[in-house]
Length: 181
Image 1: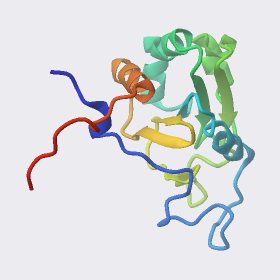
Image 2: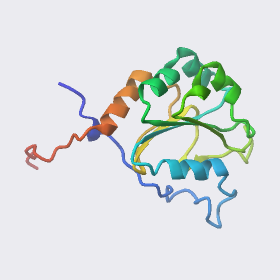
Image 3: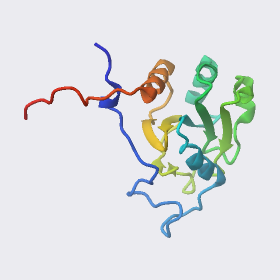
């Protein structure tokens, strides 16, 4: 018996969480940075896009890079866009660390930085309309829809491989009998 991926998949639209002030709204405390605007445009692609929020000082992020999982994912999924957005890092994109692990040479990898600070009241608490409370965080989009949001810490790459495969599948319940209520 296999896992039925879309039975637990959470979809979201490109619209911001209504509980959070939209970056362009009068209640917002900051203008939307260029990196955030670029990510919002990129995730509209009909192809898969993985947005990875990270920082070079984060030990969990370092463990992911050391494992080689991100490089393997980028190489094995050339049609998938991988966007590494360094957050809470005072505008530094972390390119030097990503270069050490071979990611800067991948055609399907884009590197960006949020200009915000690491600590304090100005530290971002949302990105592209989604809450951000922990890094690393990894979000999988297709056609502008959020298919998976993993906000708990280190990525387990077999899980990400499964999520990418499930995101490309045409699986559904349309021909299955319904349960009696």
